[in-house]
Image (cartoon, rainbow, N blue to C red):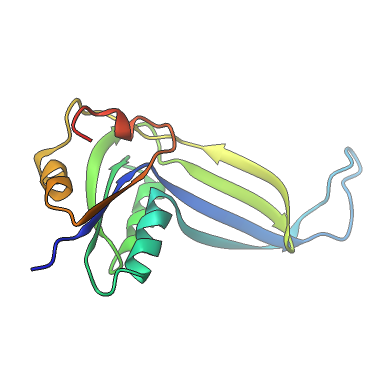
Amino acid sequence: MTAPIVVVGDALLDVDLVGSASRLTPDAPVPVVEDVERRERPGGAALAAVLAAQFAGGREVVLVTPLADDDGAQRLRALLAGRVTLLPIPATGGTAVKQRIRVGDHSVARLDSGGAVSTFGALPAAAAAAIESAAAVLVADYGRGTTSAADV
């Protein structure tokens, strides 16, 4: 069996709300965005894991990341299913979601929410074993505490 590539870090859910704008609001000089399409994709360490899997030549890619128990985490799990093996670390707070409001190719605003915080001292045994047996370890740190564990 070939050793996996392990990605350790902070997974995010990236959301683009893409629409069109043909007028400004009467109460402020901001566009009214209409006909909005929602697009979701893995972000942060989850994106790093997906990209690693695309170029891993069939080698397993494992993502070690804190995941909250919320809708954002469920959507992230669905986006990763079949592409990356997930080793979640229990977390408090909500899944970090970055929502970009876009008109065509232009970002108009970004709304950030969540920010799961890991609730562990040392890594769970399965995560530590995955890192120890890895062919390579990729760290994607977004400042949410995942890589502050002593055994990372």
